[in-house]
Image 1 (cartoon, rainbow, N blue to C red):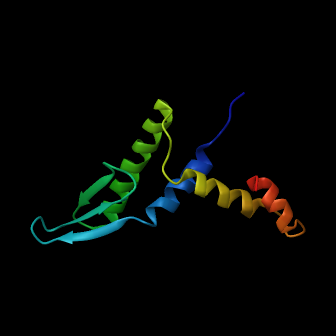
Image 2: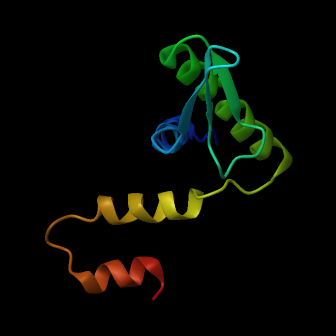
Length: 103
């Protein structure tokens, strides 16, 4: 059976990009960006837009390599728990939410 996980992974990565740190380097006259929880996920370009685009590519490579090697993805559990909660419909109680979390 084929399981399409591309949309949840895309949302996960888009969410992580919101927490990226951007800095301008006067020495290199370029923008630098990184995501602290992801070692090696770093980008450097002339504009913020180019830097963000490169950072997104680096993050995607990091995620795909971790999945291929069976390594955990930083903050994915927290992201997944938020998604479970968001799927609950308005008529479900907080008790149903605690059952989903296993509390």
